[in-house]
Length: 148
Ligand SMILES: [Zn+2]
View 1 (tube, rainbow, N blue to C red):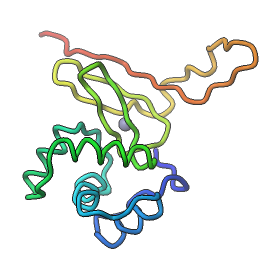
View 2 (cartoon, rainbow, N blue to C red):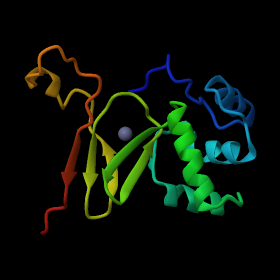
View 3 (spheres, helix red, strand yellow):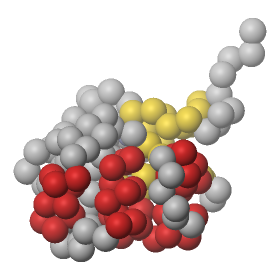
View 4 (cartoon, rainbow, N blue to C red):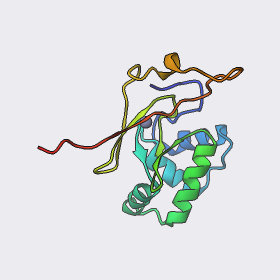
């Protein structure tokens, strides 16, 4: 589910390519952005919130405050490198897969999962107001585990 044309997605976690990617997306390669970019763009897509990324940064000995992590996530998201996905008032996630796709949200443990492509086809059934077209559809299907 990745669109290779836009935005420029990091193919690896190497600093040189990360610097190039930041520049291509209009961001200066600051120490904070490089440190967090290394943790985010590992080549494997992830859904992560500011707290989780902050914990990872601490584990990686990157000396960054939660506020810096939060600001950087928003800068990446504005530059098109991340997609912000709000699950509820207290659960804001950042998705490294910026392509159009929908999510499951497991409420018990606040886990975010991608819904396989093609299994949600809302566009077909929607009756749109006159003169309007769909720009984007964000579907969040909320789940809880069945108690045995
Ligand atoms: Zn996703």
